Structures are given as C-alpha cells and as structure tokens.
Length: 368
Figure 1 (spheres, rainbow, N blue to C red):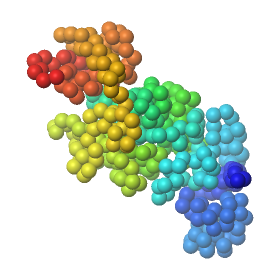
Figure 2 (figure 1 turned 90 degrees about the vertical axis):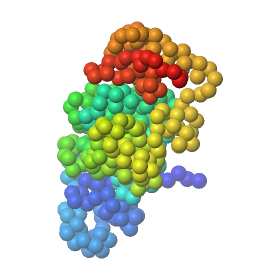
Figure 3 (figure 1 turned 90 degrees about the horizontal axis):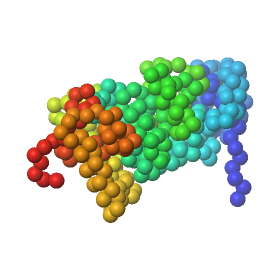
Figure 4 (figure 1 turned 45 degrees about the vertical axis):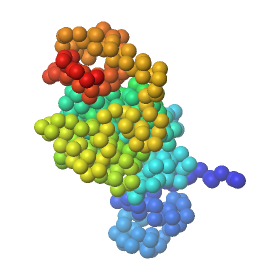
C-alpha cells in the first residue's frame, strides 16, 4: 500500500496563521476542500458557505502574514524543531480523539514522546514542600515504569513533575501556553532548556506568542488530551488543575488524586475529585494498575531492594531532623529517588515532614 503523502506544511502554516480562524474552522475548510492548499485557493463565497460566517470569510480572504510563515519554515528546518499538521502520521494519536484538537502543533525535542504511553501530573503553583516532593517522586517512579510525564511547565507541581520525569527512563513533555520558542515563566527557563533536548516542548500557538492568561486554560485541554490519565497532587477547590481534571473526564481519561489532611486548603480540590469518583492513589503502583499496566515495583528482588533502601534512609535520619540535601549526602541516593522513598515512608507513617523541608522519624510504631 502506498503511504499517504506528507502534508503541505507551508499551506498548513498559511492556513493556521490566518488571524481569527480557529482550529475547528480550519478543519472544516480542509475537510470540505480536501487540503489546506485548496482551502486557501477557495473563493470568499465558498469559504463563507462552509464557515457560515461572512466576517470570518472576509478575514480569511485577507490571508496570513507571509513573513511569519517563512520564519516558521526556517525555524522548522533546524534540528530538533518540528511543525506537525493534523494529517501528519506523527500527530499524537491520543490528541486526535478530543473534541477540538489543534490543526497544527509546534514542537521542540523528541517528537516520538508525543505518541508514547503518557500520564499527566498537575497541581498547585504554590505547593507545600511535601506536595513538591510527592509530585517529583510519583513522576520519577512512573517515568521509570515506562510512562512519559506530561505537565504544563508552570511553577510548583508542574516543575516538580517535569524534574521527576526527566530523572526517570521515559522523560517528560511540557505543554506550553506560549510559543514553543518562548519559555515561560522565566524561573523555569533552565528546566525548559533541559526539556527541549531530553524530552519535548509542545504548543498549538504560533512562534513568538507571548504569555497571555487567556491561553493557559485552553492549553490545559492538551495536557489531558495527550495523556492516558491525569494525576492531581495538590489543588485548591478553584484551580486550573481541577479544570484540567474535568477536561480529562470529558475526554474519557482516568483521573487520579493524592489525598491529604482534611485541614489543608491545598487538599480540598483532591478530596473533591475523590468524592466525585477520581481514583485515590498512594503510590505509583496504584496508577499503573488502574491503567492496566505492569506495576512500577516488581515483586521478589525489587521488594527486597525497596526494603533495604527504606531501612538505609531510616538509619540515616536516626534521631535527628534532616533536610533532603543532608540525606542525599548520607545515603548516596539521587534526589528524585530519595524523594520517592521519603514520600512512601511518610505515607506509611514512618517519618514526618517538618517545616523547612526537614524530616524526622516517627517513633513508637507498633504495626509495620
């Protein structure tokens, strides 16, 4: 069988960069006329008939900024840069399933990750220290188990999830609310530059698009759309993370939430999700099993290794209160792996997280 022809990227760009013509309108035009090139050549009357909007047809007739098309084509010719049309075989298969997928994606880095097994991890921009540790630990464990971690490159939980994903075997994808050539926020510039070669940066927005608060809620549908499920780590009742979780439900994705204290404001959103049917999770294995995948931690030798490492961490803490940096020095474990063990020990009631990012053993346990 002859493989389908590659999309005409220049025409796809020219169509996508017409001001005021969104992705759904672009798709209707391509489906009606057969290609982006044919749509661009159509008469205003025919375009108005397809779109049912004479104003949109008038805007369409004005065309796009040709300089922007040429600049984007030059950018895409550089190693590691990609412009992917909906008709392209490389377009993410999960994203094709949502109601309003972008007609065009801009990506930097490892394009193949966009069709890997994926899990989104989202949460507060102002998490507790424990929330950040949980996000990084879950992301690392899930990445090691074969899931590429998807998040939004925001401060807080997103950044922790990306760090954990990059530390594992399956890397991480950042879905951006700016042009893919503009890393935002600036505080995450170093992280974004690590993600570009090791993972993938992706956006539906044209190059050089600056930060605009209107773009970030819309970006969230792509975070869930690219993923088999969404894990919410910490979230207030009214937050972008809950928007992402609700979009995931609408898209038929699984939603997971980590429980916490009934008194903590940043646990209220997770508890609300659990009440509404989200899966309560306490470790990465819970996520893997719910998705029907092999558990992150195998039995037998892996259990023995886990127990030995856990005991080593407890011995290192001793009767002191220590920071994660001190424990890295004492145990020799990498920070993401250590964070995963600390999260599990806290969930089991063996240690307590103290203010200032320090840890203390909980004495007097009767049941292991």
